Amino acid sequence: MNPFTLDSFPNDRALAERVAEDCLRLVWTVPSGRPFLLALSGGRIARSFLSALAARAASHREPLDRVRFIWGDERCV
Image (cartoon, rainbow, N blue to C red; front, side, top):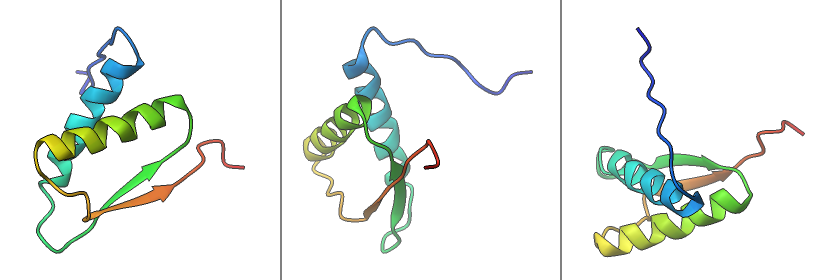
């Protein structure tokens, strides 16, 4: 049995919106006073994701002050 599902999105923006919503759900599960660590890489999808994350957090009136952003490079350079 495969524990993964494959979701398709019509464009980058739709992908970013979905991942931003999923990420916020995870942020809200972290107990108060504890940080949520989020590693990000660069690129156009990351930019769309960050914009979507900020917009969704604002629409839910949830601050992102408990999120600690860590910049990474998946190419291991």
